[in-house]
Length: 211
Length: 264
Image (tube, rainbow over all chains, first blue to last red; front, side, top):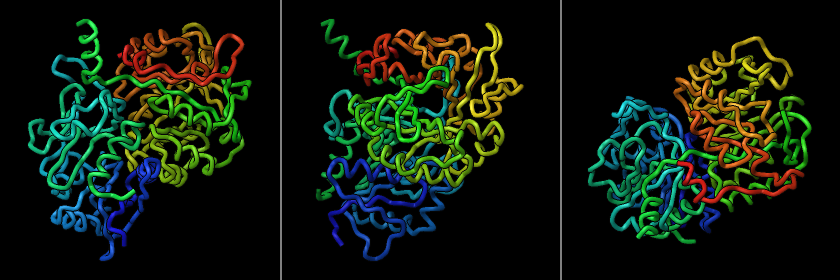
């Protein structure tokens, strides 16, 4: 098995096809894997996800991907979680009863419809927004990048040491995280035109994925 | 200094309302209708999606206008091709009557499905799909027509009748069973480029907890701004993005990033 490959985890809860499409578009050869085995290896595992938290955790447990990812993280293999995938990598969410994988510390809470000033905002946060990246992640995307978001729950600790990017919707929240070899994006780079392509291209290249 | 300030302002984190082209598919052709009839050939859907990609559109809605009428499945083959070229969110509607079709569409790489005719008869379908794939994946499309200046009626285009049900009640019912977003189309304005029905948008957005996409009548950026002010969360259009001038020359266009950022 080519360990320089990028594996897109297909547990039936994600827009797996969209992630594979964009990776191909930027020159990589993603492989979709539903169930990992001893021979599964990769330079980068991408965990997409759309849907409910508990359903996502159940699929991770049933397929064996949950324990696989935990040991991959222990061995510092790069993992990228997108949207629900990011949430599943963390400790838990108000949305579900099942704990997350715990690879990245932090949990998720729901946006409130009522803002402090008494005005209301729609939940989910759906649409294009900017991400203010910190530190080395600043060079991951061009200036003026914007990304597509669709989510109702957000990473609750704006000052967390794992935060590498922040976004404002009613309040400022953490939209990108990194802990060890694991990265999470709350937005959908696979649906964010060239901004998403550049970001994914950087993450894949830095993880050592071969073109 | 002024330039710097302006630049700074543009870079500040800003959540922006979406402007969404609606592509109508009839068979394998891209068409554009007026008041839901007289489809005019516009071009090839795949080419058009490529152009919209280059123009970095916010999102796309693809509606198959003949699937329900001819009682056939969505054209999965065409949709898979479209999805593979689409690097922005893609919503598809047309001919979806059950959860298996919805699942197949999601697997092709489509983010959202739009339900219309089927849910008027079976609102439970919204609940079924939302519970499995999340509300964010379910857009419910409601078409309305003004029967007189101050009377708005629900328009079931597949039956060409106005069912005698209150459109606001129907809209609220759809939201309560899990619609993640409402695509509200003014049949009177569809294809007209004469401005949007702002009174309709005001009525629909009042107390609505999910995003409202207003559709029908957009012809200028001012129309978009007016619709957002009236309470729409996003604006969708057809002719605005595919026709140019009074003779309706086909020209695929989309406003620049700067024009869009000015909308707020």
